[in-house]
Length: 61
Image 1 (spheres, rainbow, N blue to C red):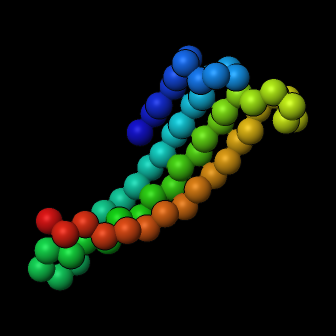
Image 2: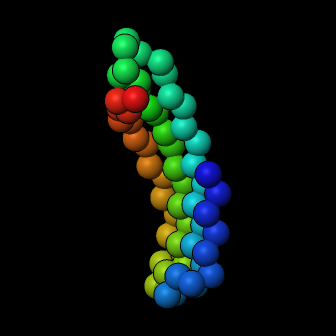
Image 3: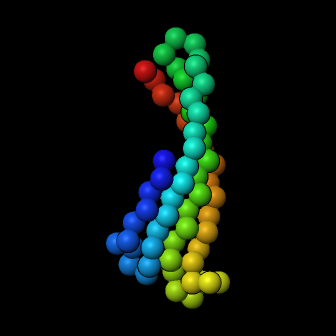
């Protein structure tokens, strides 16, 4: 996933993510993902905020 945007109110927004789906029993599958976000926000160091998020979930089909 790559998400650039120039419509963010304080500047640019960039998002980059990767994930994997692990096959489970029957219809239950586990999903793991990691995302990086960079947002242009005035007042932060270098006028941007960087963040990393981790997630897991389930899909039912």
